[in-house]
Image 1 (cartoon, rainbow, N blue to C red):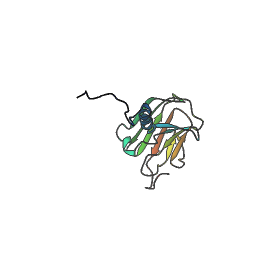
Image 2 (image 1 turned 120 degrees about the vertical axis):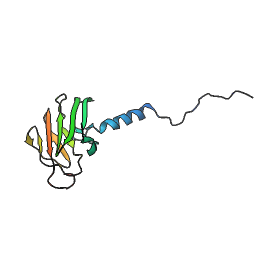
Image 3 (image 1 turned 90 degrees about the horizontal axis):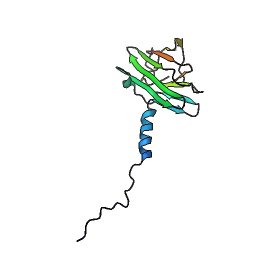
Image 4 (image 1 turned 120 degrees about the horizontal axis):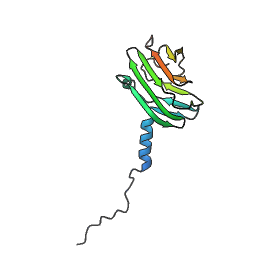
Length: 143
């Protein structure tokens, strides 16, 4: 009887580095991704509403092609609060916050000025940015 061969000749469809990098990229895209069609940096596109409770969501120094991104996003009583630091160059299409809430957002201010949502997105054109979203007056879905 001969020894059993342990020589590996074919290992099948084993995961490769590109699978791992795609997984990491998808996880990061929950928090921020670059949208090529309008050259915007989209924030919180995959962040669930429940994540805004307590300390909320915070990113610090995420690398983008526009520089390092840092922001906080949280819910306090009847408001959603966001702060975006000034550590990156403004993309041509601005910074876009997608609304994660189950109901339409209420009055929204960016750096103290009332700003309108369009198709569930808030476009921020100046950094640093402080965003305050009041509770909506009705229970309608996203704007």
